[in-house]
Length: 281
Ligand SMILES: Nc1ncnc2c1ncn2[C@@H]1O[C@H](COP(=O)(O)OP(=O)(O)OP(=O)(O)O)[C@@H](O)[C@H]1O
Ligand SMILES: [Mg+2]
Image (cartoon, rainbow, N blue to C red):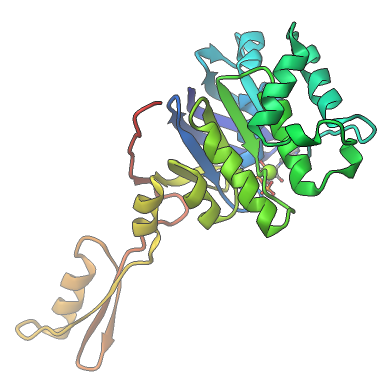
């Protein structure tokens, strides 16, 4: 599992992560959804031990990423934004190499299992350079899975690949949720909905909403608009009463009555506390 408590990260004067907290349970696929610069990669780099937080705490598979960094790293598989691939290696050779780097004794067997898991075993003898982009992403995934980590962290694995291959990669990620805790980043809402059990929306280093895809879909809609006529109050008092009602964003006089705009459920800095947990397994 993953536990993140009040994580902050500054780059010089710039605050990239501003106190985020969340959890991912075993067997859950959690999506980190957010626009460019939201802090997705920063979060993932902290969780994978590539970079320390400025403050706060992160625990993966029970190990603190700072004080137990070796154990934490061993428990995590990471597919970074840009996968370092070696074009002149074969597919099997590449994954076996990573298995050896991870200290696995039966490196070839581990490589075979990982390649089967991402449906690339048929291409084991191909040179990495001959793979399509989507296949390369799946090869990156095999590299992340080769040591059978309990936590898998994938940074925008579908970026820059064609629609059919996007489907394949999404399916592969979805399937990982059976055995692993998965944290997966994307900037595409529909992708997060399709792949994840739970979605965390990040914007400018803060969590602005989290919940199951259907909960988020319901809350993501902008507030409703209502036309109201008031008979027994003078216009000023009516306007004041409507404006002070709970959930009202603004009120506009219109056509002898008032247009009352409900508050959108998500605005930067507001947190929509929709939480739910799928049972592990
Ligand atoms: N090494 C760095 N030095 C300085 N600023 C950085 C560094 N890495 C990231 N940042 C800044 O931190 C913020 C968060 O960046 P991050 O890469 O985590 O966002 P992201 O959500 O992954 O974005 P993208 O969708 O573009 O990948 C951005 O404002 C970015 O410019
Ligand atoms: Mg990023």
